[in-house]
Length: 117
Image (cartoon, rainbow, N blue to C red; front, side, top):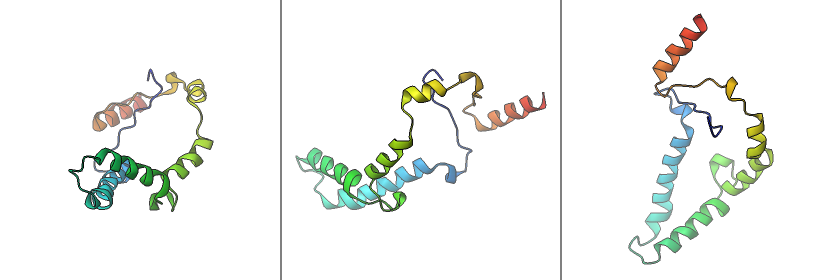
C-alpha cells in the first residue's frame, strides 16, 4: 500500500484469471521452439543472440495475443491511455482500499463477516 500497489489474489483453480502466468508459460514454449531450437546454446555470443531475439520478439514479431501487433505497438497504444505514476498516485486513496488476505478462503470469510456486521 505504501507504493499504491493493489494486492488482488486469484481464486485457486481459476486459470482464466491467471492470464499473465499462462501467457508467460506460452512465451517460454515460444522461446524454446523459435529461439533455443535455432541456435547453439554453447555459443560464446549467446548474449548477443538473445539480445537480437528479444528485440525481434518485442519490436518486429506480430503476436496473436495483440491481434497481430508487436508488443511495442501495443505498449505504445496503451501508454497513451495509461496515467503517469504521479497522476495515479494523486487519485489513489488508501482509506478506500480493502486489504485482502493472501489466503483466499480466509479473505472470503473475513469479507462475509464484515458484510454481516
